[in-house]
Length: 151
Image 1 (cartoon, rainbow, N blue to C red):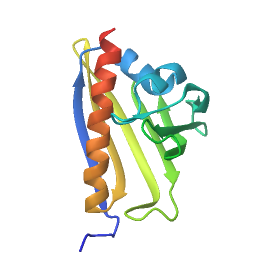
Image 2: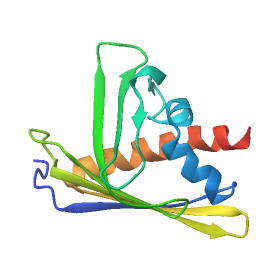
Image 3: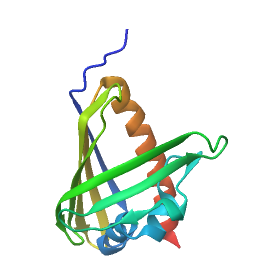
Image 4: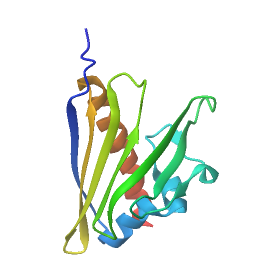
C-alpha cells in the first residue's frame, strides 16, 4: 500500500554551468521555459506559457505528452516572493490531486558559485510516491535545461 498523506518536502540542489542571471531567466522567460521545462517525453507549447515574475504575479503553462497530446498537465502558480536573479517563491492549489497538496509550494534559490549557479529547489508537500516521481521529473527537466544553457 502506498502512502497517500502529503507530508514530504522535495529538496534538490543542482549546479548549473551558467551564471545565475541566465538560470533565473530560464525560469521566468516564456520562450526559455517552453524550451526546457517538463521531463523527457513531455513538452511545453510556447503559446501555453504566461509568466509575470513579481509578487502577486503568476506562472502558467501546460505540459503535453509527446506521444499522446491528449495527455496534459497544466500548471498555474502564483508568486509570493520574487528577488530578481536570487529567489522565486510561489504556490499552486492542487485540489483533488492524490499525494499532493492541497497547496503545493515551491521555493527556488539561485546562488552564485563563481560563475556557475547552485540552484536549491524545495517543493511540497508530497506523498512519498509523488515526491519520488517529482524528483525524477525535475532531474529529467534539468537535463534539458543543461542543454539549453550550454547553447
